[in-house]
Length: 326
Ligand SMILES: NC(=O)C1=CN([C@@H]2O[C@H](COP(=O)(O)OP(=O)(O)OC[C@H]3O[C@@H](n4cnc5c(N)ncnc54)[C@H](O)[C@@H]3O)[C@@H](O)[C@H]2O)C=CC1
Ligand SMILES: O=C(O)[C@@H]1CCC=N1
Image (cartoon, rainbow, N blue to C red; front, side):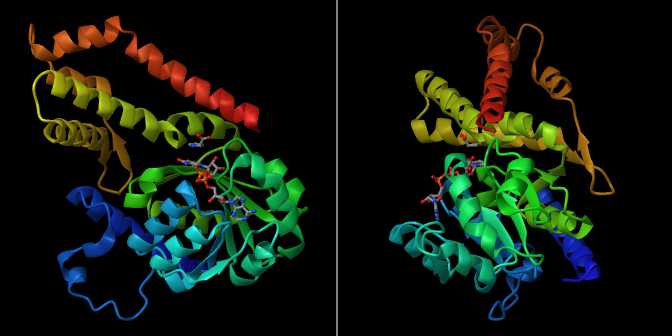
């Protein structure tokens, strides 16, 4: 893909994202009323590259589904190396038919490297060394290898694949499945501007993508990689409170989830140039509470329970665990 085409693709993605953020629609099934009328018989996708996955579990499948549903890629452009027939069946239901066997034991790494120019490594960090060893003989100058493994450093990827191989380290999160991911990425020493643009275009097609220095990646893991789990706990707990106060479960859960999503959308404003325009959550919080009212009564309970400190310690624990895994 030429740099010009990539830039155009990125602009188109930004426009789509702006639309989705504005309209709260996560997935591009009907990115605009006009697009909803388009006949999709022809393949229609934004990133004109063959993309492969070694490991398509929770996160790998969320990325694949996100790429497909947001129109970043097309099933004909995707391939994967998987361990189980259940995974292969799940992918074929998505239209991904180039599915190879285990990357380590059954030659899947060679087949995948032959079929894809961008190779995502979606296995657990503990399984990564043997995947790198299996993949190393098959990667060349045409490849960009992107690891999503928590804690695993760029230097480890470069040492495992060989000097000169272009690598990137990405920390995605599962809301990518619905086009609402929050990802950060860092680039290896051999990766260039085109690689950065490609990684950025892929990730920003399924949410927000930020380029960070590698030393930030463990902290990123603590905030956004593991973060959806904290948000789910919060939503579950708020819903439990609603049930305790007399609401039906489904009503409480829907209200809690939408409240968290809406509050997050108000922090994540967007400037005229499409850049993020963040609003401090403290300012927004103060607008909710009336003197002597309900909100401040609730906030006093949260402060008494040490919720802020608990969240800070949780993020720090995840970041430290990520650093230790590396
Ligand atoms: N789950 C999450 O929310 C996030 C996970 N990650 C990272 O993503 C990676 C995967 O995590 P999950 O998807 O949660 O784990 P998972 O266990 O659901 O998926 C890993 C997949 O890799 C497959 N696999 C393992 N060895 C293989 C081989 N040799 N050949 C082919 N396939 C192989 C497994 O069968 C499994 O389906 C981890 O490194 C994790 O740190 C990063 C951000 C978020
Ligand atoms: O729990 C984990 O280790 C992975 C990495 C970030 C989210 N899940």
